[in-house]
Image (cartoon, rainbow, N blue to C red):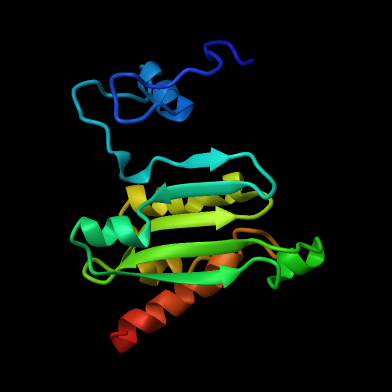
Length: 162
């Protein structure tokens, strides 16, 4: 255990009982108590087989929030990384808001999902456009590289109005 970290601690005064939120609020160097926390991009992971990681909205919650959202899904096992490790299953899903042209959610279920989700976390927090995300260069092969195709497909869908 790293100095200053407590096991199994959530953030009681917030909307989240996740340890990441508690650690963020407990670190005076990174947390501004005068500013409300932005929970749009609170990453979560479940360490199962395969790992599952989530950030932001699902398609349903985005629509319930009034967003004009759509989702794109790709199969992990047929990706270069999935093929290379002989994965039998897995998927990567992104949720995009047409109005803002921004990523508003992602779900990744595959090996290394908890590491790959952070690009989506940062994109949501920083309000990065799908156009910029589609230009991102990823290491090959990597779990994160699977996002290349999804971001490019989202840019095409936004351009065509579908």
